[in-house]
Amino acid sequence: MKKYVKDLTVAAVEFPHELYVLLKLTDFEPLPETKAGQFVEVRVDGSPKTFLRRPISINYVDREKNQLWLLIKKVGEGTHRLAELKVGDKVNLVFPLGNGFSPVQRQGEKVLLVGGGVGVAPLLDYGKYLRDNGAQPVFLLGARSKNDLLELDLFGQIAPVYVTTEDGSEGEKGFVTQHTLLNKEKFDRISVCGPKPMMVSVARYAKATDTPCEVSLENMMACGLGACLCCVEKTVKGNVCVCKEGPIFDINDLTWEI
Image (spheres, one colour):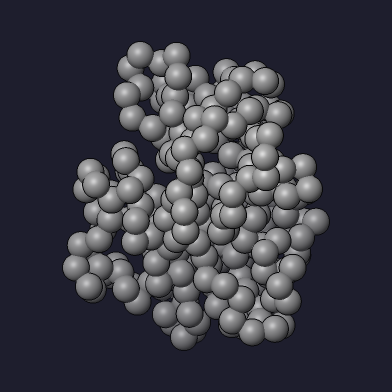
């Protein structure tokens, strides 16, 4: 898939949580084709200490409004600078990078999409793709508390949503792998994005139930093109760059102890 370096314009800035910012970016011409699960590398201007671009998952692509959404957690100086952007500002992106989630395998297949924290971001676009192409997505989202759940209303517009929170303030109390949904329903496959311990737990459940499963890795990335070797992951086929060979991997290709 062709890569682009583009200056996009900030069309809207929203703050769904005190630690997050949602940037909606647009262009004067139709946005390039992207796949759910791919990411962008964002140049951070006006931040002298931020030398490298920041990898951000594509949250959603609104073709009607010609917008690309980035859901960003404010962690360091670079992401805090991005949270200060205003409508009309320009943002330079290299995109689309990496490989997307798996395409629809067959009509009517049931796909469980599991996300935790900011890892829910790419699942919004993927859920819509699955629904629009004849699959039956189901979301299972986890967070520390109800205040940490992101975009629930948007997920609910696409497919059924099940929730766990560690403090029990929303949905079922506990972790995603403890949700009763997993004991009630059988899924054709699972796609996961979130903190590594959560993904490992879901991968373990998938192995135990003989359910195909893919995960979206979030290794530290610098170039996004496989040149800097910063994001190397050990696999059964050897060491690979997550930014180029991933970020989506079949759990059978990883060397996780599950």
